[in-house]
Image (cartoon, rainbow, N blue to C red):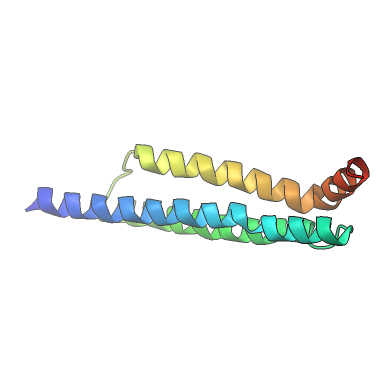
Length: 119
């Protein structure tokens, strides 16, 4: 009985991690239309702020991941070891968060640099 329950919980966590990875893919795609719009218009208005939307999605994924981890610890009564899926999602959250931060902080500079290099 406990083996079946553990398998069901692990399957649920695996599905949750897949959803988290999909949301991170969405977070990476959010700045793309704004990049195209800014390049088309020849100004740096929208690409930088789109990094904030990326970071918001990353923060939601991270908070959900921490909540799942706390649930797992509370149910087991002890600290559970991190699964490989958790570690992979955690690393991906960091990378996508760093990209979103760079876009938010330097998006206008990136657009202006591209516009100067592009005739």
